[in-house]
Length: 510
Image 1 (cartoon, rainbow, N blue to C red):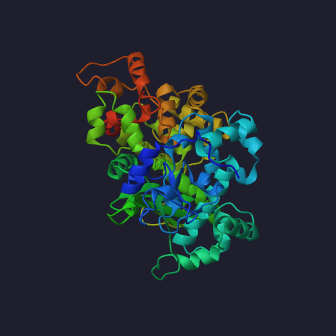
Image 2 (image 1 turned 90 degrees about the horizontal axis):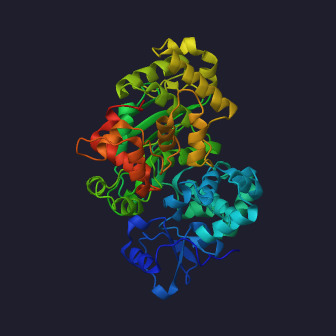
Image 3 (image 1 turned 30 degrees about the horizontal axis):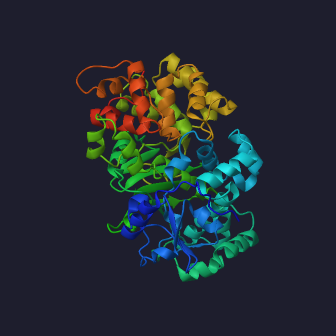
């Protein structure tokens, strides 16, 4: 098995040592601590007594630690660590390949196909993974599957056969063999050692998972953003968090995302995902969607360090250090809502979106829970509706034509939300569609892809917000100033929008 490369991406060893000894949650997932005397690897926030320095090795990823023969700690549970955002974000080949792996690409396809999707040779991609993460792509994929299985075994009462399916294994025999080889215990033995918490009696119990993040995280700010845009019947933001319908009319379900109860230690740095009616085979993708939507793999410390070099942004970062990119559940849904919101207020866009959902969405056979009655319209539904029917909800002919064009482009593959796209390629594909300008394309990249460098330089509010003295920059001047913010321009935009209260003003610029 490959050993970690000397050039693998790790914080400075002295930083790792201080973070380990202080159990600093800001470094959770940025490195893992392996203890030679026990053969166990841990998160830097592990509550167990700190091992002696001479027994400790540091690894840049869980996959690297497992490739070196270490097993995950049952106490701090490495499967709960947030992903290292810099590896999974942006346009580098490793980041784009990781996003595909997170969607289960290697479960059914070969490494050579993965390399081709990110326009690299197989050998080159393997080399980059070992350099950056300390493990080959297959090792990263295998570790991801087993750690997700470990979380399901520990936190849920799913049967082991369904855990195997949810974690991407085609057979229970292969799952048992892989788990035993990696962790030196059978899945059922792990469940006996760490049984799930007791659930109240009832026929249809939810599946509850803990989704970790690195602090700080202004969850309330994200909820505020989503609350202003929530479409009645599709989703809602209430006192407990974010709720929406998922699944299909034939197999409907719903989810709720809220804060994890508790106020102490790393346990508090997590969201609570509650799933109802979710098929086991979809669990990994659903979790990945929620993580992207709430930007749970962001690294606030690194982002703030980069953006604080700008005197205009520095006080904004101090004032709200935990702002994240507010994502959306589905890329096509965000695209439709962005078109509906062009040149109108958020309230008007929400009204149009509600009409669209009620007329062209898919009604649920019975309300999943009070107020949740529909699934958002599919590309097929809007492409088949025609401009005249779409205009009937109060759209101009041009907006209705743009919606039809967007739906057809997604169906035909001319534009989409594939995770391996670069930002430039994404913007080029979307701006080729009628009615989609650079602002809308960058807005989609920010909200639907969670791209950290998306930046709508044509936004009037940003052009006024950056100077902060009543002046307005040109798009070119704003673009030039923002070059110093790369690769985190999207976070700069969120801070400036938040200060100017722009999210409550318009859904999308002209």
